[in-house]
Amino acid sequence: MFATPEQRDGGDRRHVHLNAFDMSCVVHQSPGLWRHPDNQAWRYTDLDYWTSLAQTLERGGFDAVFIADVLGVYDVYGGNVDAALRQATQIPLNEPTMAIPAMAAATEHLGFGVTASISFEHPYTFARRMSTLDHLTKGRVG
Image (cartoon, rainbow, N blue to C red; front, side, top):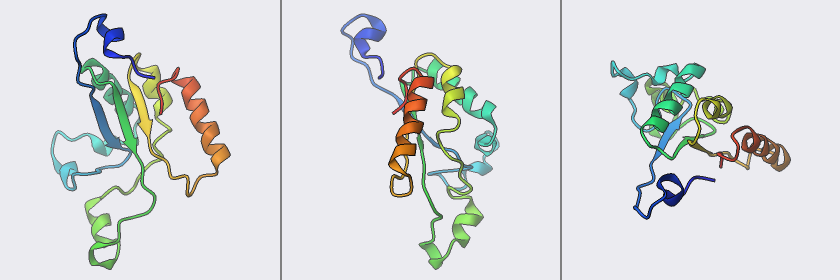
């Protein structure tokens, strides 16, 4: 799926493979980061945000971007969802595969990984969606 180091530079040099991690939400693993003046994650509902991110990653030599997913809201702290809602902790969260075709069209080599819960997905429709993404990205999704 991804180019080997030999395919990328024609030599025997060793490479570090870089993979970015993101979620289609305001903030994923760094609660409060959305308040930083340079943070653009609040634009997660804007397709230009995702295509720009993909192009930046490809220019930076990244091999792939992994877009995580989660179903439900964190409700452990305080026994309810209040803290998660106040801090925008992985909520609201968009479906992660929808931006991938546009990101693939805006790049040439960047790979895409996603998570999906097959506990909540019918196997046929999940396989169909992944097959479609495989075709639309020319084999760059996993």
